Image (cartoon, rainbow over all chains, first blue to last red; front, side):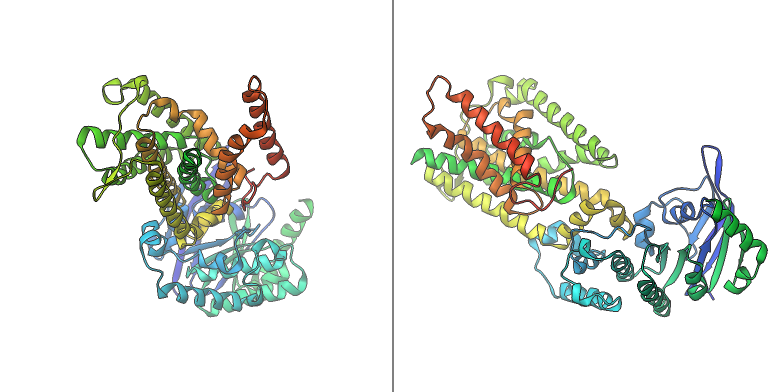
Amino acid sequence: MTEILRLKNISRSFDGLKAIDSLDMNIQAGRISAIIGPNGAGKTTLFNLICGYLYPDSGRITYKDKDITMLNPWERASRGIGRLFQDIRVFKKLTLLENLLVTFNDASENPFKAIFGRINRKERDKIEIAMNWIDFVGLADRKESLAENLSWGQQKLLGLARLLCTDFDLLLLDEPVSGVNPDMVRVILEKITESTELGKTIIAVEHDMGAVKEIADYVYFMDSGKIVASGVPKDIFDNHEIMESYMGLDNVA
Amino acid sequence: MNYLLHILIMISIYTILSISLNLPVGYTGLLSLAQAAFYGIGAYAVALFMMQAGINFFVGVVLAVVLSAVLSVFVSYPSIRLKGDYFILASLAFQIIVFTILYNWIDLTRGPYGIPGIPRPELFGIVFDSLPKFFALSGAMAMGVLLVAKRLYSSPFGLVLKAIREDELSAISIGKNVRRFKVLAFAINGGLAAVAGALYAVYVTYIDPTSFTLDESIFILSIVMVGGSGNLRGPVIGTLLMILLPEGLRFLGIPDSVAPNVRQIIYALVLILLMRFRPQGLAGEYRLD
């Protein structure tokens, strides 16, 4: 298996408090890695470091063997690192179709092309690609609705479709099934699994242990800014010491 | 008839100003108080190109558009990475700097004396010297700007701007260089506003800095807010209302002694009522919070 993302000795402090502490992580392409751990363990900070919303105090991040440590967020995204935010952040006043059409980063976004150019066939191809992804998450009949009219769970699906439409290879999902009803959880997990079959690599932060057990190929257990254990889900969930510390801490929080 | 044509010409000039301002305001969420500065840059640039360099009006317009667009980058590039409110401040600063330069660079602009005797535009031997001809010119240019705006709004570029307005972080997360798009939107706004300035200069044939003050910028921004931003209809409706309302109030038969004051009061009242009951503007899609 090839490695797609490597974090080497990453540290990041806030006001002297180490949120991420000398963390190493190697993500293998094509599988679903889940990051679990108590609140405040640094999971979201880790995502922000990978996406470039935060920079590490020390350490290096490489993506597909290229150093991306100092790249800003849109540059990382355009290299293929996508993110689904916990609060999804769909473009509310755009239709579903527009939410996906806007993901194509190409020359048609040049304003001079827009003013002087001809509307070409490529636009139709884009609509077809976008429709495929809307169809993939089962929202085809809503393509012309505004995104704000979707239910929370449907918005999560739209967020996933938008991410898939980007052509990015590495997708970071921040609590993809939080706040979603059980039926919808099933659909979302199914779509995430199918995404890896289409060649995507997924890293998910998730509190729903059932969901993690079901879809993760590999699990990282984080606490106090470090990865304290990692392995296939069975090893992690059978490790009573870890599970007890997790449940205990989680109950306190 | 002349009065009517004059109003129509002013409507076409302000349509250009509001349509262009709609791009940063309604499509990108950037409030600008510098519209009169770009309006003034266009007016002075065209006047000086025609009078000092003997350049044809239409070539001068193109040059003025480029100049104004380039100058807009001085506002947008340093300030856009800051959060919204700072952009307004930067645009305000730019407005004041431009006014100050127009007022004090006497060698170039003649300062408060203004520039009189700006020649009429000419194309293939046709001189646009009468009101009907001038209306044809200004109407055609306003239509041109509307067409450009329409194409921009419905293009992938316009869609990205809308996405940025909806959620900047999300736009970044799908790989959009948000800063670049904002700078471009603001440059297009500056360029198009210069077209209005050029028209104004050759229409009144005399310009001085008092036509391009902060008050004027606020007036243009209020057109966009009253009409509603985020589509083409809003700024057009806003322009019609804001130009026609004060003109219409002339015909109310208010005694001359109090007329100007009463008109101002009615005008202000209409604006306040609009903001209270229709904060997204008469035809707007986007509500400025």
